[in-house]
Length: 322
Image 1 (cartoon, helix red, strand yellow):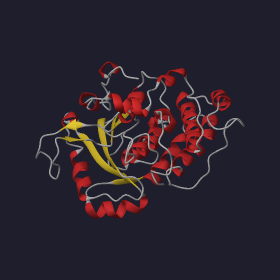
Image 2 (tube, rainbow, N blue to C red):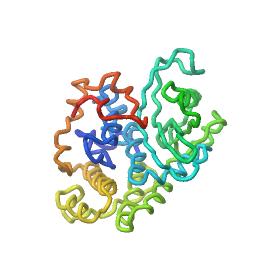
Image 3 (cartoon, helix red, strand yellow):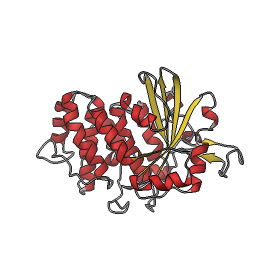
Image 4 (cartoon, rainbow, N blue to C red):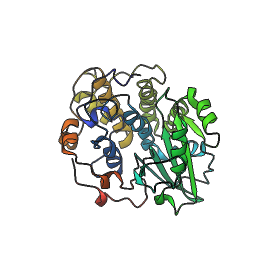
């Protein structure tokens, strides 16, 4: 799907399929790292969270689906070749994890910092583990520089204390051979396979929630050109994201995260069809627009380098921004 096919969103919640539960949640802050970054969210539209179909938009839009059933992430972790021992007892992740590095310390990496697209931290019966991702939109080829960065993602200073560390590409099915040819030492997981993992994960929800969540997962991927499934019908004849539809979803769903996903999915459908709707909660109405966020330069280097995947993250580390 072309990143220029749809208009730019005015507010972050218009293009967030899995809405965070509150402004005090980790989910809110790992997503705000992306929508609040004025260095990527410009009016030019080459990249950024607010421009539908960009990597900055797609990566959290699909990966954040895991927040509904994080304990089901075993197959994703094991795609790296790492063995998960027993149950996953704790798991978290973050996006655009910027970290300073020494020049010349990592072969093939020349900058003063690195930004893993995703970092997962988890704990199982064998202790803590780290998985770092280099992400490519469907159809985009990884190159040698990407492989160099990905290897370096397991050697960041923040990870020194952890023994189990793996790095993996996240890309489309048609790019797995390309990745294997440039980096036979690095594993890859595809968007298509992750979709299947998430659909299986939805079956760990209540029967009522799984019935609604499964079709919306397939639709989430189709919106980015992975599959071609139409959207499920809105929860109300008043239309996607309408006040009546939001209320109907609230009455149907048992899990807060599943409810927020169906809320967000309907709001995205409304946005992509050109309809303006209100956010489903009052606290989201305080959101700054993309223009206001970018013009104010509210996110500083220190904010971009907060270690949000770390188990010791606290909201006290975060700047008090809208």
